[in-house]
Image (tube, rainbow, N blue to C red):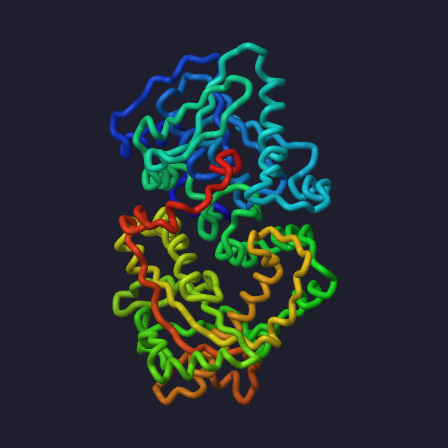
Length: 477
């Protein structure tokens, strides 16, 4: 199931009632044109545009088009099907002769980038233009309804060489991100890919953040692995990247779901031994930092997301996952701003109705660790070409994620084995099961703290957020 469960899809009257509950009696006049076209990506904004248009103008003829790159993220087709059912309309699926990965191969594996966005032109725009040319007679006026929201006044829509004009229904109604997600929750449901991704579209993109790629490696590894084959990596480096650590769960012969990361005291329970205010001028922290001067290890900062629930007596951990990592604490905190903004923008995916509920339920721990260089391997990467602009291969992101997970899981098991406190029944059984088994951990946790989650108001004025490069408007909304 790739849709976050909310309500059963009903008829157009349900959509109309949901929209009225959000925008009241607001409406707008459609600009006069021979044809009204809506591009459907499967994402939140374009889906909201389609629902709004059908709800407010049920008798108007619209043409709904989904440009399929052939490598769409899991859940896209299901989202389009649900949209069709809610509107009682057909969404035209159009595809080029080759999928995006085949197009890239034809380009000699010259990967798309912020400066070379041929992927959108060839896999999205060209098939769309061909469909329009074949469907509509020359000379007719066309309006393209675009999913740019009221809180995105800075965004520009794609221009059209055939005279097609753009119209922005969400802006006409004053609908922002909150309104869009609320409308989806009340009608067709929210695509589950928003759990790990900020946008719909291709399963792998040059604009994807490390946190999104780590999420993709967990939820759709075959798609990321296929994209990784398009990167140009030397055979020597490839050998290093394919040498993966043995998971801690496999080392002790137990399911991964029985293991846990260290849980900071601010999330649940007592503080961890290495949990304190980080002060590089203190004697202890200087000793910690001196470890990184050794040739055998490097310093890495990672972040984990903890989702809690209240069982009536205490907070319990419902889920935990690795978010991302960085070589610097500052770099990690910048990445976490984007991650937290996405959680705020899509709080319905986390089953939260308000920002305060989200802050109660989701906490982010930061871990500083020494990672053994031997576990990473010696990578040259000279002459390599990768999806990521910083030159990091997709396989390297997977490997580092597995290494970090092993360090965190192994650290928690060691803590339980050495604990002088009374353990709960589950932890006692786990320690007994491990027995004298030696666990290989490729590093050590040195410090732990909590990420200070900014408010939504703080993020509006944050320069890291406002000055970030924007992906193409045509590829996913």
